[in-house]
Image 1 (cartoon, one colour):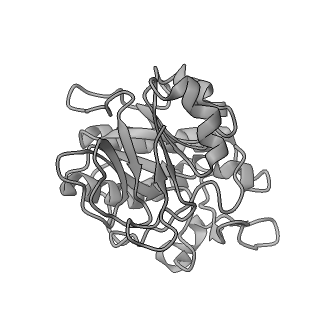
Image 2 (cartoon, rainbow, N blue to C red):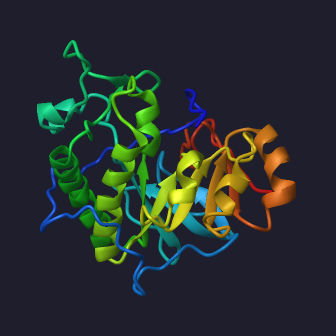
Amino acid sequence: MKRFLPVHGKRFASFTAAGALAVGTLTAVAAPASAAVTLPPLAAGFDYQIGGAYTPPSGVQIVSRDVSAAPASGKYNICYLNAFQAQEGHDGDWQSDLLLRDSNGNKVVDPDWKETLLDLRTADKRTRVAAKVSGWIDTCASKGYQAIEPDNFDSYSRSKNLLTTTHAQEYIKLLSAYAHGKNLAIAQKNTPELAGNRVANGLDFAVTEECGEYEECGDYAGPFNNRVVDVEYTASGMSKGCPEWKSKISMVRRDLYVVPQGTSGYVRKTC
Protein backbone atom coordinates (compact mmCIF):
# COMPACT_ATOMS: atom_id res chain seq x y z
CA MET A 1 0.00 0.00 0.00
CA LYS A 2 1.25 3.48 -0.80
CA ARG A 3 1.21 5.00 2.64
CA PHE A 4 2.82 8.42 2.86
CA LEU A 5 2.48 11.05 5.57
CA PRO A 6 0.02 12.53 6.04
CA VAL A 7 -2.20 10.84 3.50
CA HIS A 8 -2.55 7.23 4.64
CA GLY A 9 -3.31 5.69 7.98
CA LYS A 10 -4.13 8.77 10.03
CA ARG A 11 -4.67 7.86 13.62
CA PHE A 12 -5.71 10.26 16.35
CA ALA A 13 -7.07 7.72 18.82
CA SER A 14 -6.84 8.48 22.50
CA PHE A 15 -7.58 4.85 23.38
CA THR A 16 -9.16 5.40 26.75
CA ALA A 17 -9.72 1.64 26.80
CA ALA A 18 -6.04 0.86 26.29
CA GLY A 19 -5.65 -0.87 29.62
CA ALA A 20 -8.56 -3.21 29.17
CA LEU A 21 -7.98 -6.95 28.85
CA ALA A 22 -10.12 -9.44 27.01
CA VAL A 23 -11.94 -12.22 28.77
CA GLY A 24 -11.73 -15.72 27.41
CA THR A 25 -9.38 -17.68 25.18
CA LEU A 26 -8.39 -16.58 21.71
CA THR A 27 -7.87 -19.05 18.90
CA ALA A 28 -6.21 -18.57 15.53
CA VAL A 29 -9.29 -19.61 13.57
CA ALA A 30 -11.11 -16.93 11.62
CA ALA A 31 -14.76 -17.37 12.44
CA PRO A 32 -17.16 -16.58 9.60
CA ALA A 33 -19.55 -13.71 10.16
CA SER A 34 -22.59 -14.95 12.05
CA ALA A 35 -26.19 -14.03 11.40
CA ALA A 36 -25.89 -11.58 14.27
CA VAL A 37 -23.20 -9.57 12.44
CA THR A 38 -24.59 -6.60 10.55
CA LEU A 39 -22.71 -5.47 7.44
CA PRO A 40 -22.57 -1.83 6.33
CA PRO A 41 -25.14 -0.78 3.74
CA LEU A 42 -23.92 -0.74 0.15
CA ALA A 43 -22.95 2.56 -1.52
CA ALA A 44 -24.34 4.52 1.42
CA GLY A 45 -23.39 8.01 2.56
CA PHE A 46 -20.20 7.83 4.64
CA ASP A 47 -18.32 10.11 7.02
CA TYR A 48 -14.86 9.50 8.44
CA GLN A 49 -14.70 11.03 11.91
CA ILE A 50 -11.67 9.41 13.56
CA GLY A 51 -10.19 12.86 14.21
CA GLY A 52 -13.17 13.94 16.31
CA ALA A 53 -16.90 13.24 16.48
CA TYR A 54 -19.61 15.65 15.30
CA THR A 55 -23.21 15.42 14.13
CA PRO A 56 -23.19 13.49 10.85
CA PRO A 57 -24.21 15.59 7.83
CA SER A 58 -27.47 14.92 6.01
CA GLY A 59 -27.44 11.74 3.96
CA VAL A 60 -24.78 9.96 6.02
CA GLN A 61 -25.62 6.38 6.96
CA ILE A 62 -22.14 5.07 7.88
CA VAL A 63 -19.79 6.72 10.39
CA SER A 64 -16.31 5.67 11.48
CA ARG A 65 -15.15 6.99 14.88
CA ASP A 66 -12.37 6.28 17.35
CA VAL A 67 -12.99 3.73 20.11
CA SER A 68 -12.85 6.59 22.65
CA ALA A 69 -15.94 8.22 21.08
CA ALA A 70 -19.59 7.29 21.33
CA PRO A 71 -21.28 5.96 18.19
CA ALA A 72 -23.55 8.22 16.16
CA SER A 73 -27.21 7.70 16.92
CA GLY A 74 -29.19 5.93 14.23
CA LYS A 75 -26.18 5.23 11.97
CA TYR A 76 -24.06 2.24 11.06
CA ASN A 77 -21.01 2.81 13.27
CA ILE A 78 -17.47 1.55 12.71
CA CYS A 79 -15.10 1.58 15.69
CA TYR A 80 -11.51 2.56 14.86
CA LEU A 81 -8.62 0.74 16.59
CA ASN A 82 -4.85 1.04 16.09
CA ALA A 83 -4.34 -2.71 16.28
CA PHE A 84 -0.89 -3.33 14.78
CA GLN A 85 1.19 -0.46 16.19
CA ALA A 86 1.54 1.29 19.55
CA GLN A 87 0.22 4.83 19.67
CA GLU A 88 3.02 7.41 19.66
CA GLY A 89 4.14 7.98 23.24
CA HIS A 90 2.31 4.90 24.53
CA ASP A 91 4.94 2.18 24.23
CA GLY A 92 4.68 1.84 28.02
CA ASP A 93 1.13 0.54 27.62
CA TRP A 94 2.60 -2.65 26.13
CA GLN A 95 4.80 -5.33 27.62
CA SER A 96 8.33 -4.67 26.40
CA ASP A 97 8.72 -7.91 24.49
CA LEU A 98 5.59 -7.14 22.44
CA LEU A 99 7.32 -4.16 20.83
CA LEU A 100 9.10 -5.17 17.63
CA ARG A 101 12.90 -4.81 17.80
CA ASP A 102 15.65 -5.32 15.25
CA SER A 103 18.78 -7.44 15.70
CA ASN A 104 20.43 -4.61 17.63
CA GLY A 105 17.54 -4.37 20.08
CA ASN A 106 16.25 -1.10 18.64
CA LYS A 107 12.52 -0.58 18.32
CA VAL A 108 11.14 -0.72 14.80
CA VAL A 109 9.17 2.48 14.31
CA ASP A 110 6.74 3.57 11.61
CA PRO A 111 8.72 6.46 10.08
CA ASP A 112 5.64 8.53 9.27
CA TRP A 113 3.66 8.22 12.49
CA LYS A 114 6.47 7.58 15.01
CA GLU A 115 4.67 4.49 16.26
CA THR A 116 6.47 1.35 17.37
CA LEU A 117 5.32 -1.75 15.53
CA LEU A 118 3.96 -4.65 17.58
CA ASP A 119 5.81 -7.96 17.48
CA LEU A 120 3.57 -10.58 15.86
CA ARG A 121 6.25 -13.13 14.97
CA THR A 122 5.17 -15.93 17.30
CA ALA A 123 1.81 -17.45 18.14
CA ASP A 124 2.31 -16.56 21.82
CA LYS A 125 2.97 -12.90 21.06
CA ARG A 126 0.07 -12.68 18.61
CA THR A 127 -2.24 -14.11 21.26
CA ARG A 128 -1.02 -11.66 23.89
CA VAL A 129 -1.34 -8.65 21.60
CA ALA A 130 -4.80 -9.80 20.53
CA ALA A 131 -5.86 -10.17 24.16
CA LYS A 132 -5.15 -6.48 24.77
CA VAL A 133 -6.85 -5.36 21.56
CA SER A 134 -9.82 -7.55 22.40
CA GLY A 135 -10.36 -5.33 25.43
CA TRP A 136 -10.86 -2.43 23.03
CA ILE A 137 -13.19 -4.59 20.94
CA ASP A 138 -15.22 -5.19 24.11
CA THR A 139 -15.45 -1.40 24.50
CA CYS A 140 -16.68 -1.03 20.92
CA ALA A 141 -19.35 -3.66 21.52
CA SER A 142 -20.48 -2.20 24.83
CA LYS A 143 -20.86 1.25 23.27
CA GLY A 144 -23.12 -0.08 20.53
CA TYR A 145 -20.87 -0.09 17.47
CA GLN A 146 -21.68 -2.47 14.65
CA ALA A 147 -18.15 -3.03 13.35
CA ILE A 148 -14.45 -2.51 14.03
CA GLU A 149 -11.70 -1.02 11.86
CA PRO A 150 -8.30 -2.39 12.98
CA ASP A 151 -5.67 -0.10 11.44
CA ASN A 152 -2.18 -0.89 10.15
CA PHE A 153 -2.82 -4.35 8.73
CA ASP A 154 0.05 -3.45 6.37
CA SER A 155 2.58 -2.76 9.14
CA TYR A 156 4.67 -5.68 7.86
CA SER A 157 5.62 -3.45 4.94
CA ARG A 158 7.38 -1.10 7.41
CA SER A 159 8.94 -3.82 9.57
CA LYS A 160 12.43 -4.05 8.01
CA ASN A 161 11.39 -7.49 6.76
CA LEU A 162 10.88 -8.76 10.31
CA LEU A 163 7.14 -9.25 9.88
CA THR A 164 5.45 -11.09 7.03
CA THR A 165 2.01 -11.21 5.49
CA THR A 166 1.55 -14.56 7.26
CA HIS A 167 2.17 -12.96 10.65
CA ALA A 168 -0.34 -10.22 9.89
CA GLN A 169 -3.00 -12.61 8.67
CA GLU A 170 -2.63 -15.10 11.52
CA TYR A 171 -3.05 -12.19 13.93
CA ILE A 172 -6.05 -10.62 12.22
CA LYS A 173 -7.77 -14.02 12.31
CA LEU A 174 -7.66 -13.75 16.10
CA LEU A 175 -9.32 -10.34 15.93
CA SER A 176 -11.96 -11.41 13.42
CA ALA A 177 -12.92 -14.46 15.48
CA TYR A 178 -13.20 -12.36 18.62
CA ALA A 179 -15.13 -9.56 16.89
CA HIS A 180 -17.61 -12.02 15.40
CA GLY A 181 -18.07 -13.52 18.85
CA LYS A 182 -19.16 -10.05 19.96
CA ASN A 183 -21.54 -9.75 16.97
CA LEU A 184 -19.30 -7.14 15.34
CA ALA A 185 -18.31 -7.06 11.70
CA ILE A 186 -14.62 -6.44 11.01
CA ALA A 187 -13.06 -4.40 8.23
CA GLN A 188 -9.87 -4.90 6.30
CA LYS A 189 -8.04 -1.56 6.43
CA ASN A 190 -6.21 -0.80 3.18
CA THR A 191 -3.70 -3.54 2.12
CA PRO A 192 -5.16 -4.36 -1.31
CA GLU A 193 -2.62 -7.11 -1.88
CA LEU A 194 -4.35 -9.23 0.77
CA ALA A 195 -7.96 -8.50 -0.21
CA GLY A 196 -8.21 -11.81 -2.06
CA ASN A 197 -7.69 -13.62 1.25
CA ARG A 198 -10.51 -11.82 3.02
CA VAL A 199 -12.70 -14.93 3.53
CA ALA A 200 -9.85 -16.98 5.04
CA ASN A 201 -8.98 -14.00 7.25
CA GLY A 202 -12.58 -13.60 8.41
CA LEU A 203 -12.94 -10.04 7.11
CA ASP A 204 -16.35 -8.68 6.18
CA PHE A 205 -15.82 -5.38 4.35
CA ALA A 206 -13.05 -2.91 3.54
CA VAL A 207 -12.20 0.56 4.83
CA THR A 208 -9.86 2.19 2.34
CA GLU A 209 -7.90 5.40 2.03
CA GLU A 210 -7.55 6.90 -1.43
CA CYS A 211 -8.54 3.89 -3.49
CA GLY A 212 -9.73 6.43 -6.05
CA GLU A 213 -6.47 8.37 -6.12
CA TYR A 214 -4.40 5.21 -6.51
CA GLU A 215 -6.93 3.43 -8.74
CA GLU A 216 -7.28 0.57 -6.27
CA CYS A 217 -11.04 0.56 -5.64
CA GLY A 218 -11.51 -2.43 -7.90
CA ASP A 219 -8.91 -4.36 -5.92
CA TYR A 220 -11.27 -4.23 -2.96
CA ALA A 221 -14.66 -4.11 -4.68
CA GLY A 222 -14.26 -7.53 -6.27
CA PRO A 223 -13.27 -9.57 -3.20
CA PHE A 224 -15.62 -7.63 -0.91
CA ASN A 225 -18.60 -7.57 -3.29
CA ASN A 226 -18.62 -3.74 -3.32
CA ARG A 227 -18.84 -3.66 0.48
CA VAL A 228 -16.23 -0.87 0.60
CA VAL A 229 -16.12 2.47 2.41
CA ASP A 230 -13.47 4.84 1.09
CA VAL A 231 -12.07 8.18 2.20
CA GLU A 232 -10.25 10.43 -0.26
CA TYR A 233 -8.11 13.39 0.74
CA THR A 234 -7.81 15.26 -2.55
CA ALA A 235 -9.97 16.62 -5.34
CA SER A 236 -7.91 14.45 -7.68
CA GLY A 237 -8.93 11.31 -5.84
CA MET A 238 -12.59 12.22 -6.09
CA SER A 239 -12.35 13.07 -9.77
CA LYS A 240 -10.69 9.72 -10.44
CA GLY A 241 -12.91 7.62 -8.22
CA CYS A 242 -16.38 9.13 -8.41
CA PRO A 243 -17.29 8.46 -12.07
CA GLU A 244 -16.86 4.71 -11.75
CA TRP A 245 -17.47 4.07 -8.07
CA LYS A 246 -19.98 6.58 -6.67
CA SER A 247 -22.94 4.25 -7.21
CA LYS A 248 -21.06 1.08 -6.20
CA ILE A 249 -19.18 1.86 -2.99
CA SER A 250 -19.30 4.48 -0.23
CA MET A 251 -16.92 7.37 -0.92
CA VAL A 252 -16.24 10.68 0.80
CA ARG A 253 -13.55 13.34 0.71
CA ARG A 254 -12.21 14.56 4.06
CA ASP A 255 -9.40 16.86 5.10
CA LEU A 256 -6.03 15.28 5.82
CA TYR A 257 -6.46 15.44 9.59
CA VAL A 258 -10.19 14.57 9.57
CA VAL A 259 -10.96 17.38 12.01
CA PRO A 260 -14.49 17.90 13.34
CA GLN A 261 -16.95 20.12 11.53
CA GLY A 262 -16.55 23.73 12.70
CA THR A 263 -12.78 23.30 13.12
CA SER A 264 -10.33 25.22 10.92
CA GLY A 265 -9.31 23.08 7.95
CA TYR A 266 -12.47 20.97 7.91
CA VAL A 267 -13.33 19.57 4.49
CA ARG A 268 -16.08 17.16 3.55
CA LYS A 269 -17.28 16.59 0.00
CA THR A 270 -19.18 13.85 -1.76
CA CYS A 271 -19.41 12.72 -5.36
